Length: 578
Image (cartoon, rainbow, N blue to C red; front, side, top):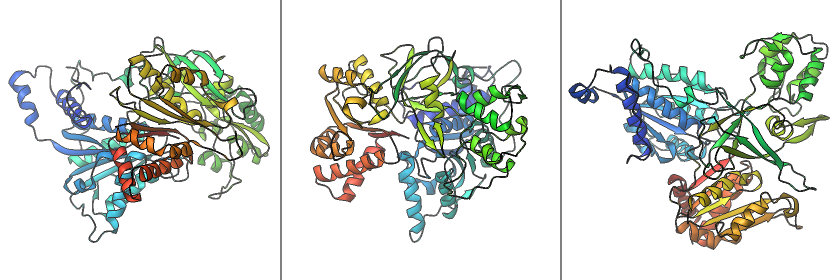
């Protein structure tokens, strides 16, 4: 079988056109014998194709990646699939669509991701207009991505699903709500959706005898399903003595992995549970840890299974049911970790096999990469704050952050993979100015951006807003940043250390103090980036940006909102927040 030709990113097509062509060509070649040449090949595209629009809303790139997979699979089944970012989609187009797949994540507590906000709001507005937008000719299905650790699980996808139905669209396949392990439910949903929209009950055609489908990077290389066992090269604390925080710089080797990454991507890390926590769970069970239990990796000792395979943080619904523990919605006394459930039922005799069946698999953690492959060949760096706190009289630890801080160097290898985030990239043109707001560990991707610009000789101006608690102990990468400023690469460095004076000062205040220059940079074409805490910092920075545009640009509040939205739509305002 011919390998599926891929349209290179250097080709003169938009990302959407490239996705459609890749999907179409995948379909043609999956259905075409190797003998199809000449006039037969020329006639192949004339077959009637079913139109299909695939909309994605993504914060970290997962939904975008799934949308592109969906397009390729749709191309194999006779669809002319077009992949579109919700940020670039006008609601007025919906009335003329025939078939629509929506793949969207939920961000934080039920919010749409940045790229989905305009369309999400437009659908709500359409429901309130008289008459409402009519989508009577539209067939659709929704794949919602989320995390059951959050109360409003998959809320954004649920919103899209309900609003499309209320506007008259026909749901061809029930919405699927995917937790962190989304691959299997996504694949089943996609198959069902494509069958429903094609009116055919036939699954994707199988390759002919002696042929095999072309290998993809995810299938043949290191990935989330097959992480690379990386050697940890270094772990060093970035805070000085006296700090209330512990932020570590971690360096991994990628030698021999074949993994590529770009500045702006994230690294997935497979953590292990703390041995002390595992020991507490075993003690609560009355187990020595040597019992064999089933795991996805085969039978293992209970101690090893609890260390490497199963999540001991937030208890699953299955575990609560098994232990007959009732948790009221919004309760502040709910069990925080698995061990809390076991300690709450001291007389309960629980078999090790029953316990592991009621546990979720431990999930990889994603961290913004703080290195550039052009400056740190064969390596990837992270900047991670160790999470430590006390609750209910017990010391608690962040699973992965303290694994990296305490045990990664001594571990033989640590499983890692690259998570691409096309929605967070430095400007393609090295002459374009950048404004970066990254307090605390939010500095991570901007260290990567700056190292990349130095390695490529980019001439664009660079402005960084950084803040933390105290300059003496929390000025992360102080020597690097001051050196970049001295050599002229870092044009401006504005600092906000909240505890160094009586009145707390944050990065958003520094933005407002420099509103006129910030607006001048934006008017000169600068891209604006934010990385860090989503719950407060990112919202405050967004409000400060709007205020700066309003005051320095002489705009009304509504005009400032439109200006900032235009920055988002043109991909000049990008956020990597968590």
